[in-house]
View 1: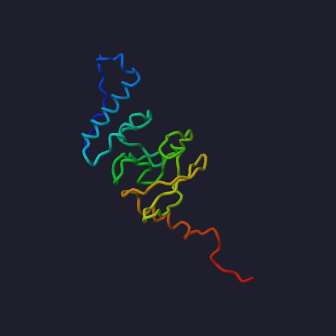
View 2: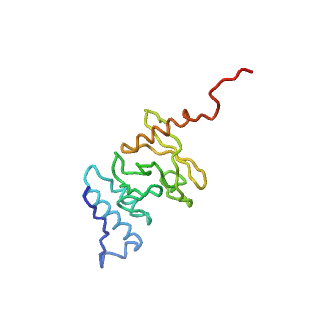
View 3: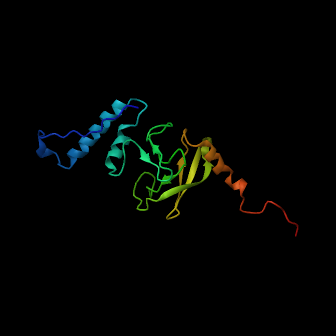
Length: 170
């Protein structure tokens, strides 16, 4: 994928600045930069809105993120989604949201993959549990996720059931 140019152009003066709010100008420039970068990325790349949201997140890296568990560099794009939210290698995530997409969590701890479940239509999702506060969340499985690890998570209840498998007569 080509490097995306997300520089926000700075202009020295604007015509009719008296009608514009000065606080609107950086936002407008960021939207234009995101739109330009989305066009540059092409049809398979992230949308302008996705890039704009990443520009608004001060801690976000535009090229992806580094897994807090295994340390692998994870790109945002790939595996059919521009909304990567967990490591494809170890399936760990980070507790960022209180509600999906709000990025309002103050916890920021690692979230451990604890199970998988099947959504309507047969799509698999990983259940993550926060290591600090214990909150549970569900994330869609991506095409490049670690399949043996997904199967291992699916088989965990069968390999070590929470009850005895032998039936004892009373």
